Amino acid sequence: MRVKHRYIQFDSHLKIIQPVKKILDKYSCTYNYEEDLDCVLSAFKYNLKFELYEDATDFAVLQQELSKFKLEPQIGTIYEKAEIEKAEWFIISKGHFQYPQPDGDFGYREATFDLKNYCHLCGIGKVQNAPYRLKTEPKQRNHQFWGLHWVFDAIFVRREAKNILKREQIKGISFSQPVLHKKNLPIEDFYQLHIHTVLNKGFDSYNTKIITCKFNNEENWHKDPNLNYCGRIKYHHPMIGGYLFDKQIFNKDFDIVETYEYFGSGASANKLQIVSKRFKEIVEKNKLKGLVFEPIMHEKFKREIPVSNEHKHCTMINCIEKTQKTSCIFDKNSVIL
Image 1 (cartoon, rainbow, N blue to C red):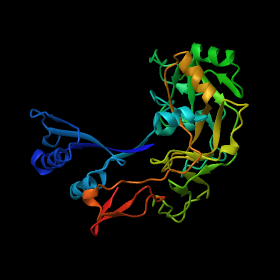
Image 2 (image 1 turned 60 degrees about the horizontal axis):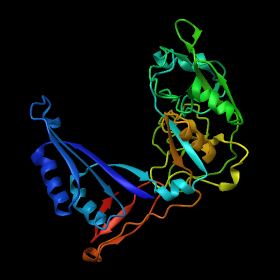
Image 3 (image 1 turned 30 degrees about the vertical axis):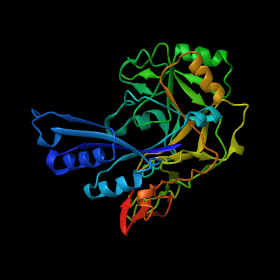
Image 4 (image 1 turned 90 degrees about the vertical axis):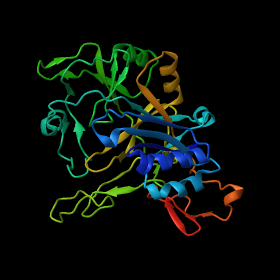
């Protein structure tokens, strides 16, 4: 497993991009630099993109030199080939192409869900009791698996994928047809895949935040003491170290399940969909497009940043925190990763 810091910077060439390029050149770092001098917005005339990996020898000192520019990277986990081959279970994600209808003021909630136990403050508790409604028929013909904005746990499939999953006797699933909103007619050859198996509790939040629906919560989100908070919890999606689950909660008799836990931030909360290696192999064998697979972890990730011989006087502390930020001390200069 590798931790990647991805930078995309638009700014004045002389103010930030030029000195950052000099630092990257100094350590022989690969980057992509583009100029568009005809751009009306001066801030977008210069574009610099580069990636840094925490297991690189010069990463620590690079972070120290770049810290004065206050660049904000996107931090993510890259899985090694061996980790993917070893994994027995995978989180699936898919593309998002439309908004559920009616989309005005999130009207799809009342149209599609039982909201008796729903909390609008954290997003937990809605239960689907009607078909999803779409504005138009899906146009992405190459995608056998399909997703919507706002509702990340809803999975849709085309007829070919539906027939293959039934032929392979995937247990614990059923299908229904979403409808065209204005015509109120089922969409032909297009289905929602329903998952009926829910895992027991088993998520380990060592590398992410627990978010509680309460006044002045961990996200510093709710400031009104008079609101009716439900007290339920969810988790931020971990950015470093992957999703860690207890291996004992998985049952090999099933190939697709949902998590007991909810994940999200703000007023968004959704469960994760997890599939077996067999499910993944069926999808790949039949060349069904539209899914991305992320391996489930069963051991905590030990985050380590090497220090070159030239900088052995530098020390690193607090290898990983629940805030997903690491404090590194370089000669008493603090750098936040």
